[in-house]
Amino acid sequence: MVSLDVGTSKIKAAMAEVYGQDRHILGIAHVPSLGLRKGNIIDIESTAKSIDTCLNELERLTGIEIFGATVGFSSVSISIISNHAVVAVGNPIYEINEEDKQRVLQSARNISLPLDRTIIQTIEKQYIVDGYDGVKDPVGMVGSRLEAEVAVVVGAVAGIQNLQRTAHRINLRINQLVYNSLLASSAVLSPTEKEMGVGLVDIGGGTIEISYFENGSMINTTVLPMGGEYITKDLAIVLRTSMEEAAKIKENHGLASPDMANNEIMLNVPNIQGKETSKISQQVVADIISARVIEMSEMIMAEFEQFGCLEYMPAGIVLTGGGAELAGFAKVMEEYINIPVRLGWPENIKGITDEYNRPQNAAVLGGLLYNQQHMVKTPAGNNQVNGMVEKVSSWFRDLFR
Picture 1: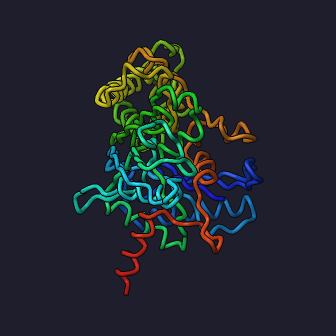
Picture 2: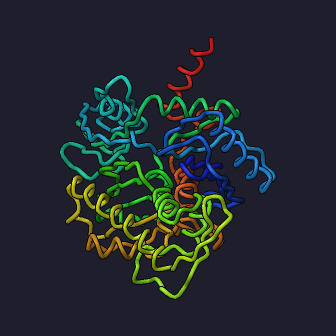
Picture 3: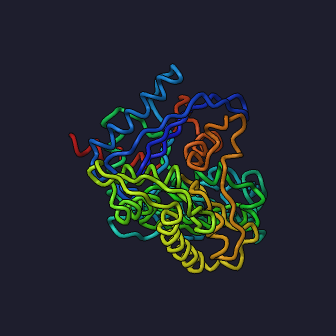
């Protein structure tokens, strides 16, 4: 199985072999991402080339040809809508079957949306059978009335179409299209955390995904149009250097907290042309980064307050994504929000090496877990593409008839 994470700053792909409930990671590849801004594709050709380069590298590492993948994505257009539906059980003996379950889910998906928005996926929060709530899977239970509470993930039609067109350019089949925060949660959150109440913050290059989980399911989510690239740009502007040099400074010497910096450590920073250099202390670098990290913490806190869950997160907040690897980020956010904050390592994936066991790989590795847990087989044995991708594929075919 293959997982693909289409991010603003990096494209990542991972492959695993599955043995029952166990899996063996065969390889992970990543390349710089071109053609995306704030999670949205702005250049299909460049994005397709980046994805193709990444998949070719994964094929080289594993020796296995790739035809399809579970694709994780993010966009500032993402939102979530809670809905509730009720159906009468059709079986005369009142035993709930898979058809009853699908009927109530289909009813829950019937929501009114603007023409430029579409349903991407449906998250099953709980079922209620004859008034008894908290049911995870009603199939096989006895009852005459079946209810479903769901969270419907909604996004822009154009964004999904552009992703589908990009995949078509390189003959890649999208087996499942999944919101990145769900993939990352599979890798870094424990069942207990999801049950009690936990916040998940995935800090990417161009977006920050903020999600809240409770009773085992995602309850709310939003995507902010900012990320780690903002910190890189701040460094480039203030230090009057290139984005490439600023990225190196952030990666090698970046600190989110000025308290962690050493004023005696001096860095040689080349100018934008790369000719002349100036000496800048690590303290100055930390001051620049800290200002942006505090702003991000303020915005993240405001979103959790908007969700109405800031006082109900006994499991705290889990930071993941490449931006979360900045030294001291979790410490600064914890001090600012006054809630326990930890780094989210993909610990739910067994047998991965230290090289891969990093927060920046949470979504792509989580995609392998999600793939295994949610992939539905058709009678012919092929992977069943989720409804949205199938619909977009139809639109795409119509365009070229």
